[in-house]
Amino acid sequence: MLTQRVRENATIDWTIKENVRAKLNVIVKRTLRQYGYPPDMQLLATETVLKQAEIIANELAGK
Image 1 (tube, rainbow, N blue to C red):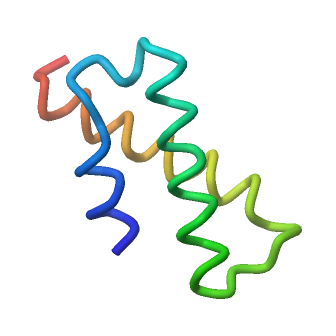
Image 2 (image 1 turned 180 degrees about the vertical axis):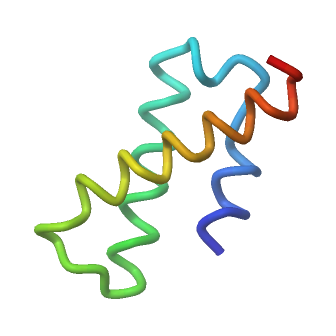
């Protein structure tokens, strides 16, 4: 579910544009909260998810 939401909302240049990155940040936090993820661990989990998404995006772009 989380992967799907990130893929649906990531644009081509999402790693550059802060507003798109902020939107993904909110989506990740909402999804974690929806599935009962502990609030005190959400920041680290959100950062981890966004880093992983960035790595995947770079691999798909051939960077």
